[in-house]
Image (tube, rainbow, N blue to C red):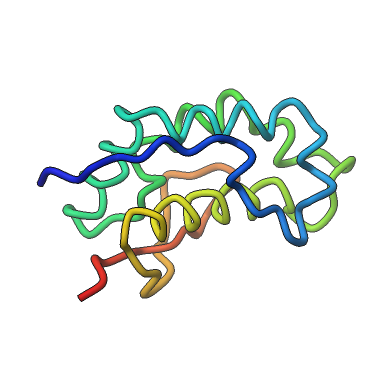
Amino acid sequence: MVVEIPVLPFSSYIGGHFEYLLKEPFAEEIWSYFTKKENIQLMLDAVQENKPPLWHHLEYIETNYGHYIESDEFPDDDVGVMINNMIKQIMQKLGYEHIACGMLRHAKYIKLSGVYTKKQ
């Protein structure tokens, strides 16, 4: 499937509840990772496989950012939830809508992630 992938600068992410995390360098690193064209394509591939967009990125994210996800410095799994929120905003900008939560049984930290379908 060919989808036009827009440029998505970090400033386009709406932090909401996670605004306090945006001052942390890892927040922009994660956004930059997810918004690379090849990584967006992997998210779209996962959606075609009826998997959460995070599916093909889980190992990278948990290896490189797991210590932030499990850190007591950030409450209530906010880093993991922010990651899913970033993915949600990216998918929405691509014309997809959240339809369910999918299990990531192989995950260490992020056990649930959104499942998406193309808007009709």
